[in-house]
Amino acid sequence: MEKQEYRILIKHCFLMGKTPEQSLQWLQKCYPTSAPSRTTVYRWFSEFKMGRTSKAEIVKQVHRIVLSDRKVKLRELAEAVGISKERAGYILHDNIRITSDGTARNVITEHWLQEEHDFDWDNVAILDEEPHYRKRSISEMIFIRRQTHGLNLQDMEGLLKAYLPIIDKL
View (cartoon, rainbow, N blue to C red):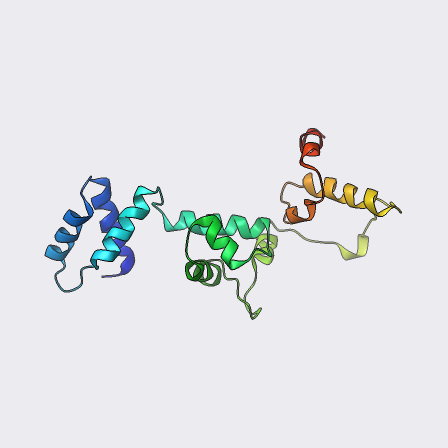
C-alpha cells in the first residue's frame, strides 16, 4: 500500500475520534505485513491535531510565499510553513518545479503562462520620467502596489506602511 493511502486511513481514524494507539492496532490487524510504524501514525495524528489535514494546503502556502518573495531562503520558507528544510526543498523541486540548475520553468514563468501575460517590446511607452531618484522609486513602488497580479511586492520594502491605505484608495 502507498504512503498516501495510509495517510488517508490514519486521517479517517482521526476523524472518527480514535486514539493513535487504537488506529495503530487497527492498521496492524488489517495490514499485518505492511502497516505503518508507530512513529508515522503518531506524527500524522499530531499534524491533524494542529490543523494540517492536507498536503495540498502546505504546497499552496509554499507557492504563495515563493510568489510574493522569489528570493526567500529555504530555511525561512520551512520556518514560515512549519515544515522541515528537506520537505520544503522537496515541495519546491517536485510540486512547484523549481530547480537550481535552471532546466525547469520557475514560478514566475508558470505565473506568466497561466495569466497569459505578454509584453509588446516594439511599443514600449515610458510612463514617468522623474529625474530625482527618491521620487522615481516612490512612484515605482506605488505602481507596483496598484498591480492586481504583482510579483514584485518585495520591491516595495522602502515604502512606509502608513501610505498603503492611501494608495489602495487610488
